[in-house]
Image 1: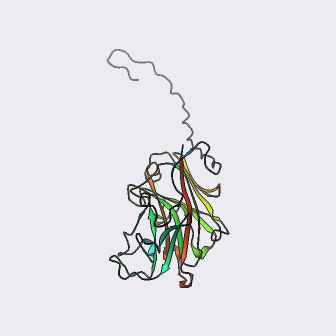
Image 2: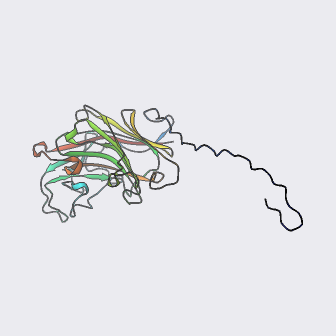
Length: 281
């Protein structure tokens, strides 16, 4: 402190050596135990127990890019309300990709394949939870089934993407889990993906799982997590947009940047979903 006024002066105080605090590195939370967390209750589900088209109170169809062409250079046309591409039968949702051209469709974009892309957008969305989807799928060359989530705000990648399961036929048995945001995505060279092997993914049903809370999101198969993405808690939305609602998507894409070349002898190709179950505390 400096003395004010004249006629006197303050006695000098020797400086005190202060050691600056050591920066604290945020603690990475431990990977949680697999399976549904104890005490969490089911808040949404589809058991696919009514034959016919998927339940319209729970699922919509994404057909928005049929005429312009789908992202990632994918080669399918996604139909709406068409049993040939999405139907419930014998307790399962079956998404089928076919080699055909729907030239009479008003939004036909020249595609040689049809499939379906179901989503809960506008019907249900969630912030945090345990998500379990029991599924199996064809492994033909060119298939690209996915179980994933997108932010309801609608801007990609800013509002986040969570890939609970992706598989491509050219890498049979390799399951991908990912989390993308504005700071972490392939467009800026910071893809955030890990792989695990499920050797019989095309022959047997498995439980594909996401546990997501305010601290982290983890992705796994059959109660064993292999992917972890931690909230840095620095209030940077570009890194962690996952404090906001996301909706669920189920689709079977054909070809594209990840799906690769297509073997036309594989059709029809299918993705089967036994159930979707979502739990929260």
